[in-house]
Image 1 (cartoon, rainbow, N blue to C red):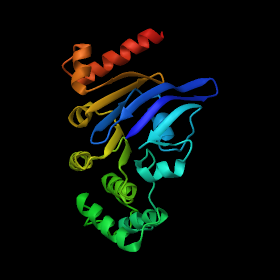
Image 2 (image 1 turned 90 degrees about the vertical axis):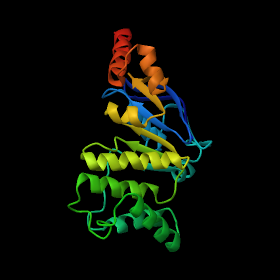
Image 3 (image 1 turned 60 degrees about the vertical axis):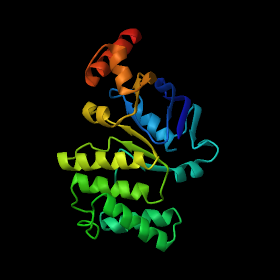
Image 4 (image 1 turned 45 degrees about the vertical axis):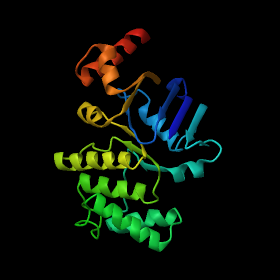
Length: 244
């Protein structure tokens, strides 16, 4: 479980994150939504300890990120917005390298790697160098790399961005598989169709603040809209009107 409590982060005079609080629970998929510049990416970077908040707390399975960032990283599997792979290494070698950074034994690495290769349908690319991979192949490799240490909490920053229909479908199914295993899945997306299909709960951020934290159905009922995209636009529009 990931708990975010009153997070603040400013860059000079710009308040990127201004008191964000929410909970992403085990066995659920939580969507983090917001327009560009809303503070989503800054929030995610604080969650996986790439940035320190000016104020507030991040707790991952009860561990305070400010007090033990290394322990928090062990509990997290992260697919960030930058998905750089080592191009001269094969997909399997990329996965193995990160597994060794986590201190896993060779037997454990082999078993977990092959389970992920099978789950993500990577058998045909496992022994190819990642240079020249398609976007979908790169994302699959990056996800396997992020999950090799078997984290209970998974953060995915726009995981389907740039994927074709089949790769997107496969990734959505894999996210549902993670949920079925009781993991906490937190992901950001601009695609309302996949948010509606996947999310148990949606956290909407605008102007650095949480403006909604509900189930998809509750958001539709709250706004009087049958379509989640229309509900999102209404929520954001109301917030921008108040800010003005």
